[in-house]
Image (cartoon, rainbow, N blue to C red; front, side, top):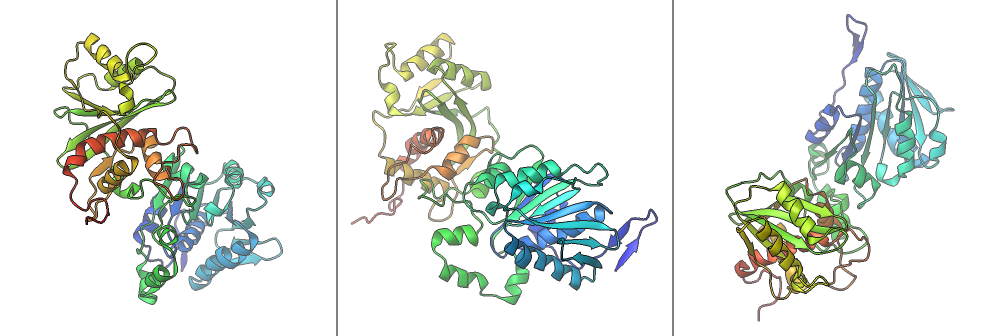
Length: 433
């Protein structure tokens, strides 16, 4: 039942046993927030409960609930909201002709709109908006609504959305990979919905039998996948392999490079037992090898010992008369830095061998994660998620994006050098007889 506080604010109590991810989502105070989850993770419930909450927090103000198409809006979004309102006995008036409702206790109005014609979203100021299945909407629709979030009398301005992952699209970039300031996201865990499992215990088992592996990973496990080609680093999982890494000044710094004009790319790591911890990345456009060294020293001026790894082609002579590694040696000698070692092979490993060892370090057959990456390494993380193989081959596709492959290549040289002698029998998933 509803009740009024001494200040006249109306409080509505709703029976809602939120799942952990849902509860975290509702607690977020960011201006823009998202709920990314697999099928059955409670996205619709979170969408509608947040709409009710914001309507009561902004009495008398205007909000909007949207969906990619009108049929989806009518059959999924509105149906879910009306079911909650009726079950919770929340009074509202529905104007079917103009497609909006009014919460009669607080006089808040909610417009229902499809986002397939986003130019029609211009107009009245909003206190809040919520979007269902955002990955099926165009980015321009979201930007139109973002511009409408400007009601000066709103108690809490908020734009939010829920969605199922659909590859490395604009939603992934905006909310997950390179979040815009003021944005936050909750990544719901698979199999978390105990309410669904109580009612249909074999729900996920049936989907596993029906879906292929990639579709199951995306729809049921909620993973972000490259849906157009095979991932080179298929063992990489952002929640499992990305975590904050602290620099230990007592231990050597491992610096691995991929010599390239634009960008010149390198990663900095340390070894902790069996684990390789990637601390940082350096990505510089149109610089010399000496400038890359200068940037490394600027970031780590007090390194006690540095071990250099990288592409064997860096040993080739340049037009200047020196190889990349020769220029590095000359630079560090001029800086009176004598604590530099070089672990560079005479020739590069086979791509398949390097990918095998990388994937085994990202996740071993026993489930161990021996490669951890600091979240500041944004370009490296994008590499591990988006670098793909040419169809039917073990050849890395280097044509799709000029910024991709360089950092993962650099890391691969380091991992191959450190792990190859410790590689257990059977590691490569090949027959051994």
